[in-house]
Image (cartoon, rainbow, N blue to C red; front, side, top):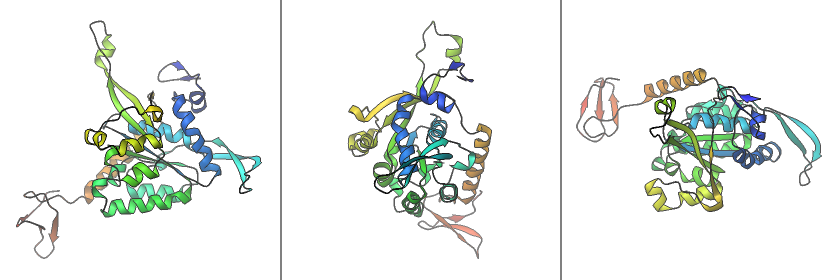
Length: 299
């Protein structure tokens, strides 16, 4: 078996199992959660952060495919504490229905898809921002995540910055963090023409365990500078290869539709003081809730 896009043979265990290049160390760290969620009435939440264009969405789909349990079989074993049967995963599948770009889409997937499926919240910053902890969006999202545990799902939340996340989600609720970074090839006079024309390298990831991300989030000096240093045995570096699990055109179409819908709902700010504005129906005009401004707004 080989990775058709890269032309490289697949030899590492997780790469062979998944059908595309996948970091072995990440697989070893996450595999246990696949069995915990399947057999021990729990869920699993992972955070992926990084700059726009760093590859978060692609890597999230690969992580989802590693974790997803689409079918399973009875091993014949029983759990010593509960007497319940022990199951072994036999199949996985990730489709566009498992990716949400707003709270409503994610709610629907968590509640309606079968247990043990992996769900991706591709625009998680909209619902988990520590600077807006009292906003209704954040409150409803935290309530949803409390409810979500009973559905036994794998939930992957994408965010621009882990440090800007609500503490409950960043520190307590999630089991790990993947910080995705852009890298650039070191070019010199002998570099190939291809390297000179394509110097950006995506897929560089620093992985933090539950304790590692806690140490990041609670360190004020790291947060102020948005730093992601290695932390003893609680973090490590890996590289993910290019591979989209869900058809990329299908993914882009759903994302564009969600973005257009969001823009329809957004109310612009006051052009004078940037505060919220309201619609005065009898005059058919917008007015500011703080300053004297009123007028028309072009959407």
